[in-house]
Amino acid sequence: MNTVQDTMTVAQGITDLGMMAIVAAFFLVLSALLWVACFRWFKGIIDGMIKGNTKMVDDLIVETRKQNDMLNDISEGLKPETQLRVKNFTGVYFDLAIEKVCRIIKKVREENHIADKEATRTKIRTLLHNLHEDRNSRFDSFRYRGKILTTYVNHDWVDWVAEVVEHEVYSDTVNNGRAYTNVQAVYERIKIDFYHKMNHE
Image (cartoon, rainbow, N blue to C red; front, side, top):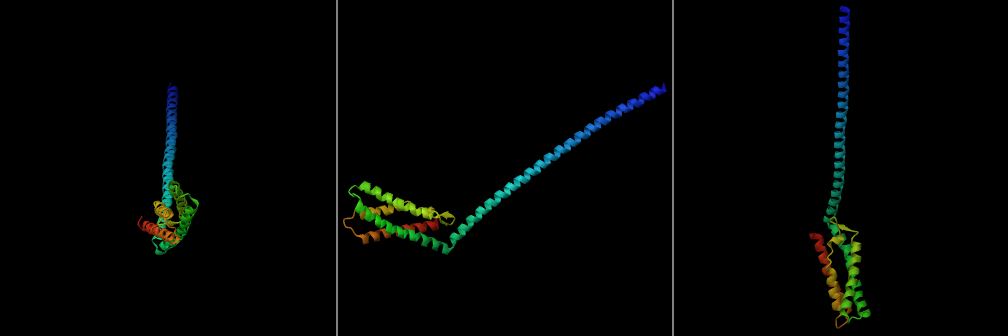
């Protein structure tokens, strides 16, 4: 009887211990899975922070380079020799425009039926507008204080010159010397306006 009882006790102990072993193994596996999940989650957070910081640093570098370029342009514009270069360069095109406008006056007088004032006015403004835009296309290649030179151009200049051209075309007497002087005067006004804008905008 004791033998049977002992056998039952041993069997019961093995059963209890086996169940505990299974439960312990289950919790060990669960714990390992939680560790892996936590590690991956933590790794994901770290990777995200690193990527975010990398992007932020890249953006900062790009912005810094832009600001450096802008500061270089501004500092270049503040140098007196830069202003002198711009004035010399633009002065050539303004002086050339004087000659071209005088030719326009002569051409309109000779080729147009100037009695039709509206058609003549339209032609004059078209020719002057073309001259103005051609000069602007050349100014676009140069910068002053971080801005292209056409930033300082005044579109009213076409009207200023057109007024002088129309006056000369419809003058009672043809006087090329007077026409040259009047055109030169309006371009001196344009130069002053241009240089004023360069230094105050």
